[in-house]
Amino acid sequence: MAKLWTEPVTTALRADGLRVADIDTSATPGFIGGKQLGKAMLPERGELLSVLQEKLFAHGRTGGDRKVLLILQGMDTAGKGGIVRHVIGSVDPQGVDHASFGVPTEEEKAHDFLWRIRKRVPTPGQLGVFDRSHYEDVLVVRVHDLVPQSEWEQRYDQINAFEKEVADAGTTIVKVAMFVSLDEQKRRLRARLERPDKYWKFSPADITERAFWPEYQKAYQAILDRTNTDYAPWYVVPADHKWYSRLAVTELLIDALTGLGLDWPKAGFDVAEQLRLLDQS
Ligand code: ADP
Image (tube, rainbow, N blue to C red; front, side, top):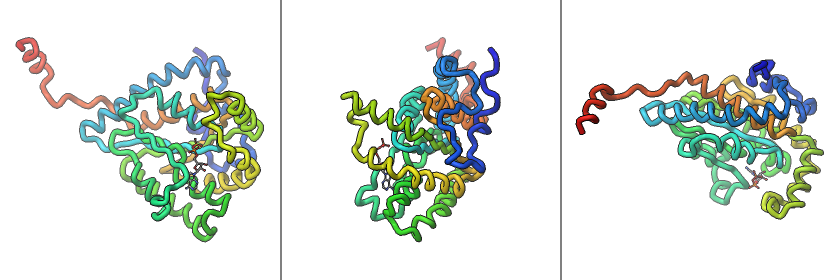
């Protein structure tokens, strides 16, 4: 089959030097196959992802300490839920630790913003997924002045230090920022309002938040400028095309898991001997 990626997804989507205002949310960086092929590829790539994730799980079960953490951020309707369902959904759930972070509870508010996050970092062999994350503490919190600027300003450095600690403990961190256009968001919100089976996904606040779009763009820019590190890089995923964002995140995870260089654990027993004993049993 002809080559469908013109460059690795990790370089096509790296956020280095990127201006949020310049993001073409309907683009498909690096991929020239188009929708039909892109959609058709997903199950096959999901199978590879599943095998790689099982290797990670087996590694954890046999004393290994590696883990992978996918951090998902994006405006409402950007498709984080679709990534969880269609990408993470292709792997064995026992190896996945999915954590979603909503408005902090009273107990969470009484602690440092990283308190609830630390509790959910993946354990050995796990693929952790943060569905929203500590980045909300410099996004919604910054946009709505939920804490004074002097406090959120410090958080970028605190986040970098925290992620360094997590990475040093054997975690490959993959940060994905999904971007839809304001128009596409409007279409998706309308679709939610036109379908009773989608009402549950809608909140009136989704509409009022649209007025803050420029402030969110600024807050996302600050994140990309200040927390895009070599140990926890940001990837910017245009998300107007759901088939593309799902394929792209699948490829990012395949890359992260392949990078671990894991093989199936060696048998801790004499296989021939066990086969002989089995035959005799
Ligand atoms: P989702 O929109 O991801 O499906 P919810 O409908 O539960 O999930 O929305 C979660 C909400 O929690 C979002 O509006 C988000 O901005 C908010 N949130 C998350 N973290 C924080 C935080 N640290 N402070 C204030 N609000 C937060």
